[in-house]
Image (cartoon, rainbow, N blue to C red; front, side):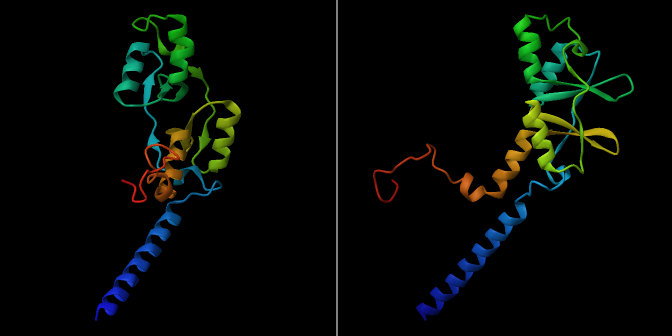
Length: 179
């Protein structure tokens, strides 16, 4: 009787383990998958005539590391990043209440298509030393890909190994029971 119960519990555990492994596999990405398989955020934009003060506040309020900068026709003509804030604004002591973003943005940023492979995006980011790339859909910038998007997907695919780490890496317990 007890052995039947144990056998049933072992079967349930085995089935749950197979489901967990299969969900990890489905969450995994292949480096050759198109960018569109990633869970990308729509591109957040500001007008090229916006003051730096407004753009920086927008980035902070929306927890964004960058914004696309649009012209009068709504086309993305630049990108403004945290790095631009440090290198082009803060380091030069620019008055953000008077300066216009078009003078401090990165013009004509590299853009990729949602059908391009993830490997292509990572190659561009590595070679260009940048962390964000606008992604086009139907010829227009619609999404913003960041290195974090790729890292988040990898973390999701290997969540059992990533999220179950102790607070301090290589932490050793003084007790065999971990307490």
